Image 1 (cartoon, one colour):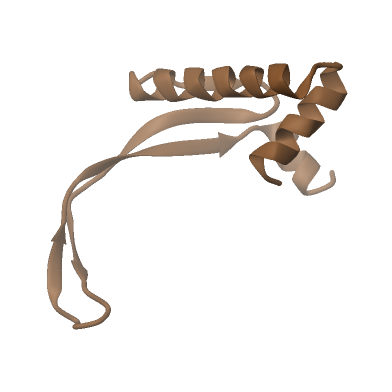
Image 2: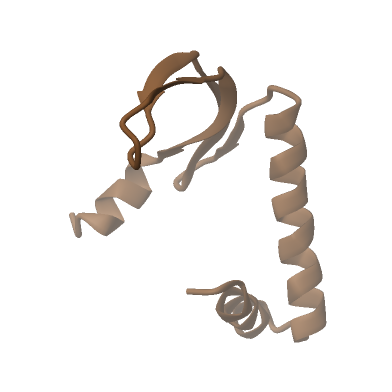
Length: 92
């Protein structure tokens, strides 16, 4: 499913124009991004949680040359699916 497909589904499901549906989706995604960037967790009950995580610095290998390289520490985004989402995927 692409963003355009999701906008179409929102527009049909909420009886909105595609423009309003895309604006709504954009606002939701931007708010999730802002909250996680600020270190907050976004919990959508029945769907899941978005949170910030961190990866420690580590040694890796260049797959082309086999040379050891240092990979810097970085921040990442974690998503944990909620129980209802997991159950839907597993058809329970």
